[in-house]
Amino acid sequence: MFQYKRIWLILLSCALFLTGMEGCGSRMEQTAPDTTPNTSQNSDSPSLGETVLTFIHVGKGDALLLQVPDGGYYMVDTGKKKDYEEIQQVLELKGVTELQGIFISHGHRDHAGGLERILEEYPVERVYLSAHRDASFEKVDAAAVAEEQGVAVEKLQLGDVLTLGEEGQGVQVEVLGPAQPDEENENNNSLILRVVYGDTAFLLMGDTEEASEERLMDSGAELEADVLKLGHHGKMDATSEELLERVKPSYGIVTANREKEEGSADPRMAERLRDARVQVFYSEGKIRGVDFISDGTKISVKKY
Image (cartoon, rainbow, N blue to C red; front, side, top):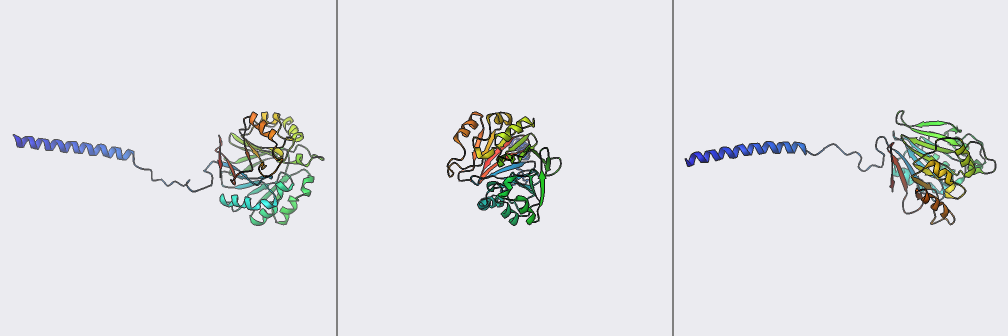
């Protein structure tokens, strides 16, 4: 009897063991690790379907880098001549070896002073300028600089729309200004660009002041944007309360360094932006710049 009981216990133990093995097998299959390589690690390039506007810190001066989804790179203004090293560091960090285009808002040296050096060091397909005759280009003759380097020049005017990148997921650049030449104030001859990707937008105002802003608002153009690059370095002669109400930005870019340049970025403008609930970024601090990353539906921010 004892022997039969022992055999029965052995058979029962085997059955339970086999059942447990089957169950373990199922659990292991469900929790098997994903061995797909993670190609997003250790890369500063945006993921597929992202557009990145990089605010390069050069103090008082404009230098922006735009990366479109297919990997093409464009600059909007080039800072001062002495800012080249800071710009080069960012381009190298981003893996930029060539530029598809450079937009120059106007010819003041803190916007176009770095153009010649960049054209000397990087292959550039095209330089985009305003079609209006602009006295600011007596400071930096961007057209002559481009032609000397054998780079094509394209003149832009109000109403032009460019598509950057692959068709179907490209970035639209809308030229919203200047509406007319301003013979008295060169800043008001700045190109005004609205960069649109999906449901997101960046509004880049150059050095535009209030007179040109008023013409912009009177035009009836769509102005809403997630990111606003303020006109004229955050001074009180630009970026009116009415403009902020029309644009409704979540983020503001002020191309000024309050720490090193006395009188730049009027503190009253900081208060105006705070009242409008705009998170503002200045060209200062111990960082190279700020990325505004759009996936077509929302904007995220990364400092580096």
